Every structure is written in C-alpha cells, then in structure tokens.
Length: 48
Image (cartoon, rainbow, N blue to C red; front, side, top):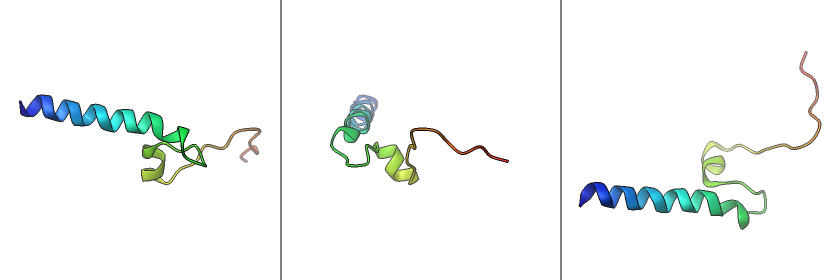
C-alpha cells in the first residue's frame, strides 16, 4: 500500500510540473521555479 501511495503522489507532482507552465506568466514549470531558472529563447551572445 505504501509504495502505491508514493507512486500516486509522485504521479500527481509530475502532472503538476507538466501543467504548471500553461498558467504561469513566465511559462516556468515547478522545477524551474525551484531552481530559480528561466529559458531564454532567441539568439544568444557568443561567449569569449
């Protein structure tokens, strides 16, 4: 019973992580918010 419960909770967290960007202004998933990261699209400056 306990392993099934952990699997169910993990599935809910994964589902929330996938659906979260649909409602977020910055289109960040939960894992992006936890790591405080953003995705920058477009041409990036070259590193020297």
